[in-house]
Image 1 (cartoon, one colour):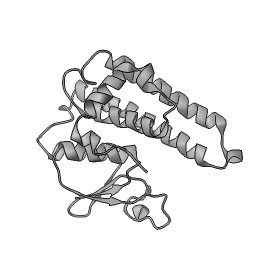
Image 2 (cartoon, rainbow, N blue to C red; image 1 turned 90 degrees about the vertical axis):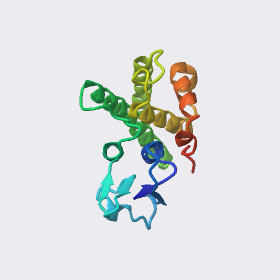
Image 3 (tube, rainbow, N blue to C red; image 1 turned 180 degrees about the horizontal axis):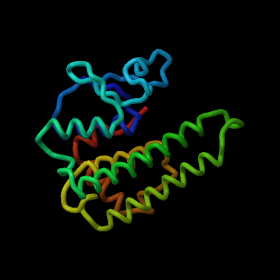
Image 4 (tube, one colour; image 1 turned 180 degrees about the vertical axis):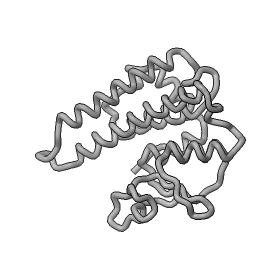
Length: 202
């Protein structure tokens, strides 16, 4: 299999962590839809990363689709529970974490536009989503060892990926101090090679 993406995308990192946790070998091809010569739009009609090319060259896109596929086709280290209420709760964690990443990426890109073209209200709205998302995750996590309680799951991967992206792009959002339980979870999971080896960088 081949994963197409960048070192900066949190959604690509989420897939990389899952592939590492599942001990799946793959080729990592660096590409970004923001590059002039990007091949991404030819593989994913939406022009987004990550894209996972299967062995028969079938492209899978949207990180949530990719990670669920990987978990379904490999019996080891299951990250999603069987279809039931708990599975929905894991996917809810993933939805919140992905929403934080979406808002952060949107605010980051808006801030890169020329100053006179930027919308301060748009950036403020995205940052508000981030803060409310952090509050929600911290409340849900409480004093549990993992997002779902006692066991590691996709909820933890998605959540720590989002926290890592904020640490990378928005150092001024000091979630480590305001939400110490999230900081504790982050520090614990960063000891896993799958997380440590995929830290975002330009």
